Length: 449
Image 1 (cartoon, rainbow, N blue to C red):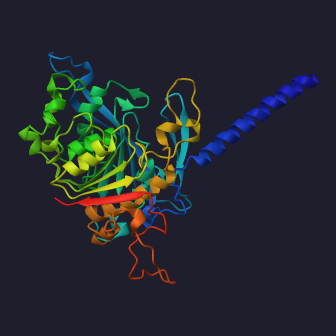
Image 2: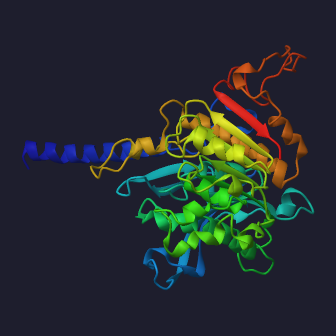
Image 3: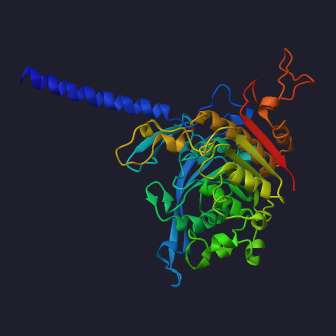
C-alpha cells in the first residue's frame, strides 16, 4: 500500500468521523425544550414526565376534494391522519427523560433530528396518581399551517403535556411538507380534521377502548391551537362561518362544498362543539382573502386568544388577525401582538440546523421557521407562558391564572417596581411573570362580548 493510498483512507475515515460529529452537534442544537434566561414565569416545563406516541386515525367516507370535479358527483375516500400524542408519563426506574424525533423539514429532501424531553412509548401516568379522584387530563389539539407537519409546534405539545394536558398534533393530509396537494383540499378539510380528531381522541379515551388513552384524557375539556391554515380551521370550528363570497370564490372547493360550514347555513350555526372550551389562533389565514365577514365572525362565542406579528405579510395583521379579533364581537377574546414580527410569530419551532442551507431543490429552509426580528426560542417561551395560563384558566378552572392577562396593554408602559425581597411595590404595574424589561415589544389587548 502506497503512502498516498494510506493517506486517502485516513482522510476518508477522518471525514466520516467529522461528519458524524457534526450530525451529533446539529442534533444537540435542535432542541424544542429550550427555556431562555429571560423567559416569563410559566414558560418552563411542568413537574410531570412526558411520554409520546404516534397513532393513526381514519375518517371513513370523507368527501374527496382532489377527485371531485365541478358539477360532477361527489367522490369520497377514507382519510387517514397521523397524530403525535404527548401525555403525562410514569417513567420506569432508571428511565431518563428525553428523546429524539426524526422530522421532515420544509424542504422534503432534508430530514432533521430534533431533541426534546418526551420519552417514546413511556407508560401513561394515570390522572389519579397526580391528584387522587381527578378525572382525565384536558385535551389540546394542535393544527399546523400549509405546508407543515405535526412536529412544527412540537415545543408546545411537550410543554403542555408536562403540565397535565394530553396534547395531540395532526399531520393534515395534503398539507404536509412531503404531501402538499392543491389548496382546495386544505380549505375544505382543515376544520373537519380538527373536529374528527377530537371525536377520535374522545372515543379512544373511553373506558374499555383498548387504547393507552383510555381513562387518560377528558375530551369534554378541549382546547385547540391552530397556526396559519390551522388558525383558519380554528376560527371556523369555534363559530366563524365562511362567507358566501368565499363559498363561490375562485379558490373554493368544487360544488360549493364550503357551504356546509358557512355562516348562512343554519345547520352549521347550530352545531357549535360544546367540548371546545378555549382556542388559540396564531396568525389565522383567510380574512384578506374574504373567507370571513361581519356576519360570520359574530358567530364566535368560544373564548379565544389570537396571536400575531404586526408585520405578518401572509395572513395580514390590521386587515388580517386584528380584523378577526375585532370582528368576533360575541366572544371574550385577547390579542397578543409581537411588534414587528412576521407570519412566523410564536408558532414554529426553532429552525433545525439541517434547514440552514438548501439542497438545490429551491424549497425555503431557515426562513420557513425563523423571524427577521425576533428570536424563535424567545417567542416560543412567551407563547408557552400565555398558553399555559390560558388553558389552565379555561380547561382546568384555575381562576388565579387570570392575573397573567390583567396587564397594561403595551408591555413597554408597565412599571417594574420591586422591593429587596422581590415583592411588588404599590407602583408596580409590570406584566405578571415577566422579568424587568422583557415585556417590551409585546401588546396584549382584551375585548369582552
